[in-house]
Length: 370
Image (cartoon, helix red, strand yellow):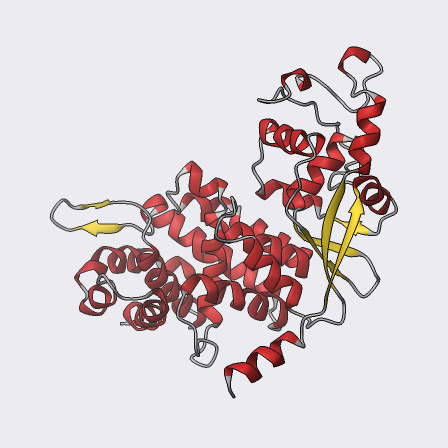
């Protein structure tokens, strides 16, 4: 197929429209329940009150905003897929934004800005302090300002809005790769997202991961939990054509956690057993390298050690061996791992993650059963 044919074929899968609306109209659409901004996403966006105030300042000064992207669902509701933080800031400013519980949240109290320092302490409505209430003439002008909506119509391909969300919320985004995946999973299946989040917050699992506060804040522990299931159910067929491990995790997430016929109860039990064993034996040394010369573990969390150790323990559990008999073997195999040629060769610099993880995952199974 030529490049022209490929472009034409793909373009037919995406149906879009551009629709300018006043902020007042957007507020009405939101209050009527026809605009979904996913308040649960707010935990992943880290805008400060200063950033929110600068957005309001821009609107008050008539500075055009970038387009907002929404996807039309089968029921006609618009799902916001880019501009979530900007829209939630606008709605919070006028005092109509609803949190995850469906309750109207506290209205935004503005900070003074470079060009409008008098905004400091101002609210849209402030009956207790009228000196700090936005004047009615400014409110009217604010609601008349236009924003541009790009609408992905429901006739578009099923995966279009998820693909677009990912593209628009990576690169220059403040979101980490896993936070983008979390938003995608929330859009696709909220119950599955919550299941994965609960597992990633498991006490034994967290105790095995010596992660920094920044890594935890950016949901890296959820990425590690996701890797557990992606690696476990990865096949050669599913890896065809993939070159980047991050993209592979994103694409595999839906296929494995949503479309795969998983027994979530059994998966949860095994996940908790694996990390209970590791926490009891090695605690936060579970995924560090053992320094035989110094006789102790050193360094930070190693994804390479994770890929090997976890696969080995899963393989042992699957043989039906009594978990109480695994402690000493886990310790021995963990300490001797850095002496194994297959582990060292797969761990060399320059080996891509997509080439490395299947080798280490298979090696781990054989290594622990030896």
